[in-house]
Length: 395
Image (cartoon, rainbow, N blue to C red; front, side, top):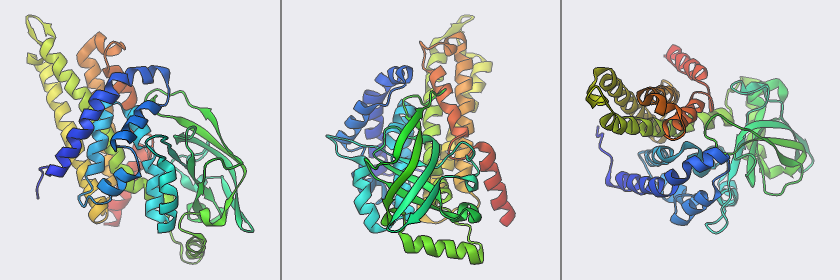
């Protein structure tokens, strides 16, 4: 077992860190304050090769360790988690397409999700509804077959990139009696009639990321736009009716992408830790730097330990996601640990800075606000504990 990053990993890490340092951090506060989507940064990421289907095909898909994506995500979130989501948010619908779609669907739709460096696009995965968050079986958006088309109707909320996306993947119910087993994922292409963005949410944190409502009103899409194809969907529904299959495209995507979400949280926590350390070395009370006071020094020691522990769990889960399978919900473990670590570490950073930590002149209050979502989206901390405990019960 080797805990050292490879040369390829460190090259990617340095490259993305430099991008975060020069392109993300200098504008982070402005986009946070304005709550605007960071199109210029996304375009710049596309120009240098960080944003685009090529990055996933050439770097992520060929990486047998599974670590390149979490390494890159940690660095962009170190710069700004909201802007980072602008860069990586399209990866979530891409994951749904890659895990559950056909090779033809991937070839057709993945390039449209990202656009080109001259004209970048983003995509969205639309799952959550007003009465269906963690409980995906309660989804009420429907997909009804009408000849050679699907007709989608419903309301999605909290969709990352929902108001900006050209391509949207919508999880909808085909057979309500089967709960989440009766659902499918459907590709809605650019400029499709019947789908439109609704309310854009004003948020506590990750404010550069677009989080919007998506409304579907008799939205018609071709029959072949169901992810995996019609035959695969029909076979899945038949298994669910006869044998109680428990598969779900949305749940599968969330479990496999949880290490990536965890890596983002680690990036926020690391940013706060590094800033707190630097501040503690410079700030003096009672004639010496506050890092020499045990009350601060021990707090920093605990923060550093928690960040490293969260990263190790994240890298383990990313490796398992690529090379095997989760035996004891390791994906959920990484997301739970990293999310709660980010909240705790950023709170401690605010405390170390005292009054300065509470004002916008210093970035720790932003990191504190950004961190909280990582205990909520893509499965709350409570849901992660359910997933982990059930995995343990299965032995």
